[in-house]
Amino acid sequence: GQKVVLITGCSSGIGLRTAVTLAKDKQKRYHVIATMRDLKRKDKLVEAAGEAYGNTLSLAVLDVCSDESVKQCINGIEDRRVDILINNAGVGLVGPVESIPIEDMQKVFETNFFGVVRLIKEVMPDMKKRKEGHIIVVTSVMGLQGVVFNDVYTASKFAIEGFCESLAVQLLRFNIRLSMIEPGPVHTEFEGKMIQEVMQKEYPGTDPDTLYQFKTIYLQSAINIFEIMGQTPDVIARCIKKVIEASTPRFHNLTNPLYTPIIAMKYADETGTLSVQGFYHMFYSLGPLLNVTAAVMRFSSFLKRRTVSPD
Ligand code: NAD
Image (cartoon, rainbow, N blue to C red; front, top):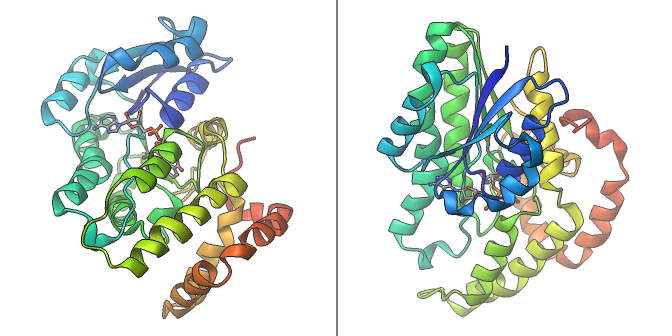
């Protein structure tokens, strides 16, 4: 029969595209429960789903930050059966650490870390009983490698990677698979929100040099990086579908070949010096050369070896 797929954060971006891609599977192998906090934001999804809406795709309310909302949503599903759980909802946060209230940092963890944990806690016991299931978590390249001015976001993604790396071992015993999806930059609302935030927000308590590094150098390189290396949400959705359909899905799944050297650098030098120094030079001296570097890398097809590809 059809597999029940529950996806969080489907009103935009990767969640929306993944919901539509799975719901439009030619062999109709999936019934997608596309969830979002507020159904008032359903229009883009409904439009993109076309005929799948009401057939292989249905909608439900789910706020990953609320115990009650998560319980209510899962209890509303027939037999509480979720075969494939896709944890996609997430929020970004950039800025100098000294300017960010702890409360704002906690909100990021509440969504990106506890939001995922909350869903896994609710769905996993039933998967264990059925001795079957697949849990997908959309983390990020920043779940594997720290990036300047993304300290807290990166920490939240590292946190969930660590949680899942631990859990994956136990889950093997129950035939439950666990896979991380680790995209680089993706053109979604995430990107616009980040750029707007940097330009408009105040960063009190930050010294002028740091503020300049952030508001000028970081912002410009972030825009460049999105422009040069950005993937579409559709590519990520197809990568996710491929991971779901793999007979032996991998735990780590980078989606962007351009990032494999960065991860390789991390594992090549266990002291961490290569990564920290490498990033320092990339950010502070090579900034202007980034375009050239990336253009060269783009044509290096050998980089694809270590990634999951959409086709
Ligand atoms: P997006 O902002 O378009 O989508 C994120 C979705 O999560 C939104 O629809 C938002 O409403 C939803 N959401 C936020 N808080 C929620 C909550 N409490 N409950 C339910 N839904 C909530 O951005 P996106 O790029 O599609 O992000 C999807 C995932 O991909 C995130 O986990 C993000 O960290 C990750 N990611 C994004 C990028 C990128 O560059 N865009 C790169 C790597 C990883």
